[in-house]
Structures are given as C-alpha cells and as structure tokens.
Length: 144
Ligand code: THU
Image 1 (cartoon, helix red, strand yellow):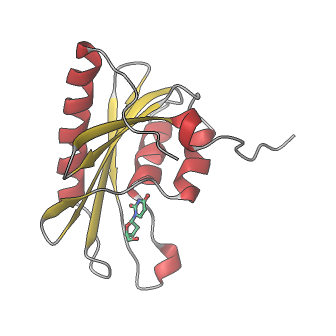
Image 2: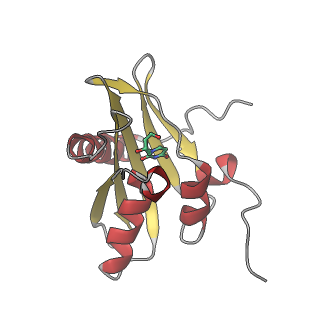
C-alpha cells in the first residue's frame, strides 16, 4: 500500500519545511544512548503554536517515550488539544533516516488528530513526504 505525498500547496510546503526544521532540532536533543536512533517531532496546533518532543530512552527499555508522544504531551500540558500537522525527523549515525510513527504513537495521536491531520516525514532518498493521518491509521480504538 502506498500513501506517499498527499498533495499540499505552496503555503503548506513552507509550514512543512519549518516543522521539519524544528523536528530536526528536537532530534538533536534526543536521549537515545541505547538505540542511537534519535527522533524529533514538531507539532503544529490550531492556534499556530509549535510544540516539539524527542525520544527519551530508559535502561528499562519499555519505559522509553517516543518523540511524537513527547510532543503531544508538551502541547496538552500547555492547553492545546487541536492539532493540524506534525513533522517527524529521525537520525542515526548522524544521518537522516525515514521513520514512520509507531503504532502506539498513532493511537495516541488519534485521540486529538482528525483524518486530515498531516504527518511530514523526511525521506533521505526522496525528500519530504506528507501522509494523511486517516490514510495511515484508520479504525483507531475508541472507548464507546
Ligand atoms: N521512536 C520514536 O521516537 N518514535 C517512533 O515512532 C518510533 C521509535 C524511538 C523510540 C526509541 O528510542 C528509538 O526510536 C528506537 O526504537
């Protein structure tokens, strides 16, 4: 299944590039001594604020927090619950790597993100790609 590059206009491209830059900065601050895989996320809210997060690993591996969830927690802690777009940048051995958000992060995002929420990733071979949340995470669990 291919969900590559949702069509976005010029204005959205500028926002995407800004978010990718903020995600890259956050990735540099990641605490990833166990995997060496540094991830940064930058989340744009409906109020035009940007919250970033990075992965924070732990010696008890299961206690690790992903970058995307860290960004969601930062936004919610500041009173923001309406999310428009997010960029995710992953780095390993100093090189950008393509990394799709894990399943747990998708479920966490589903609490706040609409199907049109855009996730921008950096593919080192093909450049930025933008995915529509509804395409990559249909049928989220909901507590009825
Ligand atoms: N990681 C993220 O930060 N986001 C994801 O969506 C997947 C994985 C982190 C967790 C761990 O610190 C490292 O990447 C390797 O799994």
